[in-house]
Amino acid sequence: MPPWLQLMADSLPSLLYAGLVFTVPLTLLSFAGGLALGLAVALIRLFGPRPLVLLVRGYSWLVRGTPLLVQLFVIFYGLPRIGIVFDPFPAALLGFVLSVGAYTSEVIRAAISSVPKAQWEAAYSLGMSWSQAMRRTILPQAGRVAVPPLANSFISLVKDTSLAAVLTVPEMFQAAQRIAATTYEPLLLYLETALIYLLLSTVLTWLQERLEKRFDRHVAPVGAAS
Image 1 (cartoon, helix red, strand yellow):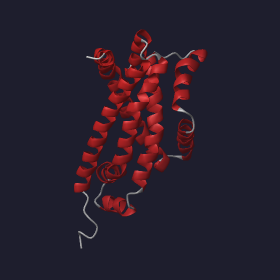
Image 2: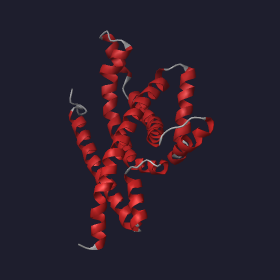
Image 3: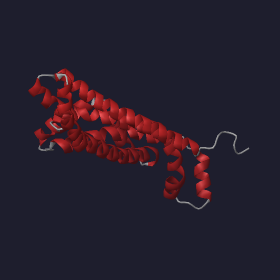
Image 4: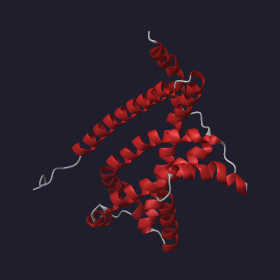
């Protein structure tokens, strides 16, 4: 086996271990937390009192208008100056949740707004409360609209977790950095890491397409009811 291929084979278990133990949990937790935050922000933007609307609009404006890397640095390296200290993993998780929440809130808000008002009226005519109408009628329809952009956000998040390396989180990219520092072969290690991210993104893209097709099967074609 050529030396370069042997190096990649030897480093693969360490990279996969870092991915499974840190990258995957960080991605899943960040997206789940960000999605919940995004839903709350979207509902406040659409139905909340004006003071809360202004507050969440400011949050969305700030997070979407600044680089994620800068936000991570502020949380991990800046907040200790005022006595707020986070360990590396919670700091990265907080940064990603805030980022995902800001972007998904816009997706969810647009998806909910796309549901015709007649659907609200139909739900109310059946005796549903606002929360029942939202849960049983509006969100299921909005979900079909939101799936593609939310899936894209999830795929982007998988790659963005590599930024956690700057906070010393031992995820996959930092594992590659450590191995490269001892083998003096950064090109091979970074290419190998890129291929793993590419494989993950490819699988997730395939799953996204399957999910979209499944949703499409439950959407009646235009004119079907006539």
